[in-house]
Length: 439
Image 1 (tube, rainbow, N blue to C red):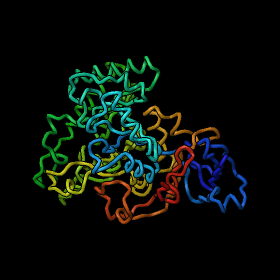
Image 2: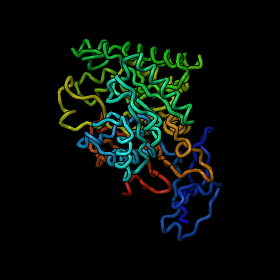
Image 3: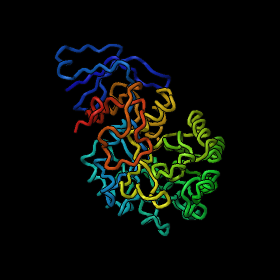
């Protein structure tokens, strides 16, 4: 047994921070001891088997519900390996990979291909499956076959399923699959009514009028949120809504949860701090889907995060090559790389308590994705050693260190951010040590 001891840190629990030492076994990949004090030898210290983490938090590793890893089809922007490196630097031990690759993940063969590509990754890569074959909303993809190889979340990504009848069929199909397999399968749905948002470049409002850019009305999201919630109630099944962004959407979900509808939602870090006025520079790094919204929407998102309406913060990591992102605003693609900045947004920009950070980045996302047996676990003896060690006071300047992602499209370039990952442990192995990738 090779025992590693983390000494003098604070473990994140549901009731707050608790000062404990923690030891894990790098062979079994399990936590082997948690105590007020764990004895170590001078040799342990000299050989790096005992590490002082005074001033740091220890959380279960983070789980991302929404990231784009490029491969296959867009390896110039990102590969699974480079995306996993960005995830590891950000404290993630599991990433749910969106299935909208080229070719998309709409068959068991595609799932196996993605899993083969992920064998060298620095965190667990969890494939998501398409709801429809090719995303065309003509025929249901073979979710049962994909589920046999571990897929539990199904989504068509992009604008979300537009055909209400098809979405109802998909919800019923995935719910039947959940019942027959006993696995927590669910549908994940972005909410963007294409007939309203088509051609839009930013949030529709005073800023879009002033800048002469076509707007995307909040209603394009809100109508689909309301429709999807009604279908979830009709089908009596679980649904997860991805990257919501408006005050009305959050209120719709809040009311739906009170009614007993089985819904969970996530929000991107960008929609918690940036407003649509950022687009005044015509800098395409501030172009997102859904678009950055109004000040009132940002305030509503923050409130919904604190009151539990928002279940998770998902990175929305979307790498874009420099030549694409540097096009004029109305021609550039949406999105930003973000796996390595989510923690800093929550800790440094929003000042969230450690237990809130762990709830929205680890515990709840793991439960939503059906990964709670391996990720998002309590920090107790016998549990998997998938860990994120956070220094909440460490600062860094975004863009002044070598990027781990293949892309650098971020609105945080040049910004000093507080809150950093010291170590990421996956299956008992340091994939990040002293804020550096180990392999």
